[in-house]
Image 1 (cartoon, rainbow, N blue to C red):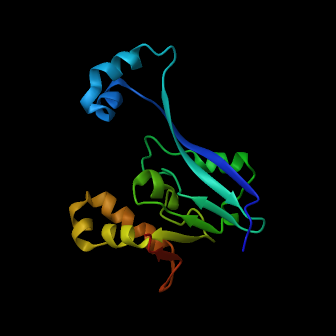
Image 2: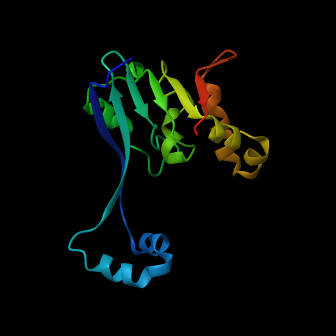
Length: 169
């Protein structure tokens, strides 16, 4: 059994919240929440963080951030890893919590190769079965469906996946 020796929070995307965000979050109480939001002395921000867990000889990321999935608003995980002197090749495992772009978008580089070339992926089996079903893929915007297929194909060596679905209860 490995013992956790270090946990590091790596901010991937930091957004300044807008009035539209507040209205969307608090639909039943928008006016009161907007009044409180407008009274804040400084802008309110929302941070999407990635966790790095080190166990002495292993490095594990919890999610991969936005990456280059939205070139107009890319994630900053790779910058944060460089700041910590962590190479992409030193990541052993990436645990994906769910398949939203801000969690899996960083798995591929700009040309579609694995960002973490030596990493194994651990994914929720239910999530994988849902998002990779042909019915769901057919209902996505074409670029999103292509990227999702590419992501898991990139983490497969010839015919052996480097990802493992795990059932969560």
